[in-house]
Every structure is written in structure tokens, then in C-alpha cells.
Length: 141
Image 1 (cartoon, rainbow, N blue to C red):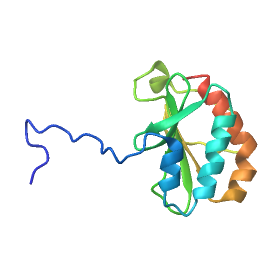
Image 2 (image 1 turned 45 degrees about the horizontal axis):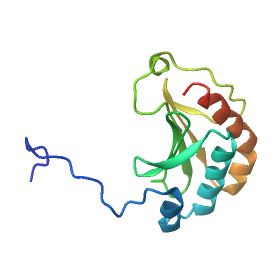
Image 3 (image 1 turned 30 degrees about the vertical axis):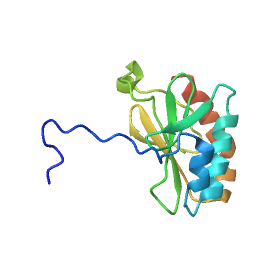
Image 4 (image 1 turned 90 degrees about the vertical axis):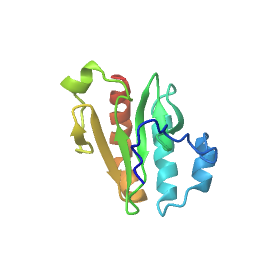
């Protein structure tokens, strides 16, 4: 059956999808769950203006706009995608300058980068630089 039939409306999100990050994480089945919790705290502690929510069906973080989203499909690492939300912005075309002395950022586009973490040891090694990257990133949101 073709899902692109004219007149078909997209289905609404299931009411079973949690709106609360705590509820989401309690139900999450992922081998790197402790690492996900640790990264969540690093992001939230980077600045008192950072809030969280479920966006794009995963924990995401925002100030005035969403800027970071977990990518949890991989089972051997945890990725955090840094972005500027869903709206097109000036820096989407021009890019931004971020000091990244440990080369944590893997640029996916001028307005989007990912940071990967293998395990808790990797998180501990990158904690301070990742915190600094988050602080720099939110200045552009």
C-alpha cells in the first residue's frame, strides 16, 4: 500500500510516547544508559538557561530554541547532535566558529555537528571540552 496517497493525513504521535525526559529514560533500553544519563547532566549543568524535553522522539535540549538532540540508534556509542533547531537561520548558511581543541565536533553541515562518546571513560576525558563547546554553541542559538 502506498503511504503517499493524496489526502492521507500523517498519523499523530502515539500517546504512549513520553513527553517527560525522566519517563523516557526510565523506559529506555540501551546498553549505554549510564552514559546517556551522564551526558544529560553535563549538558544541563553547562548553563542554568538550558532546559530539556522530548523532541524528535528523543531527549533534546533548548535555551530559546532546541540546540542539542541525542541520537540513540547506535548501540556502541552515544551521539549528541548539535544544531540550531528546525528554523532556517543566518548561521545555517555561514556557519559558526567554535573553539574545539580536542576536535570533538564532526561537522555534518555548516549548522550541524555531532559529538560521539564510546563509554564513561571517553565522557570523562571529554567532559570539560564538551561543556565548553555547549557553552559556545548556545551563544549562537
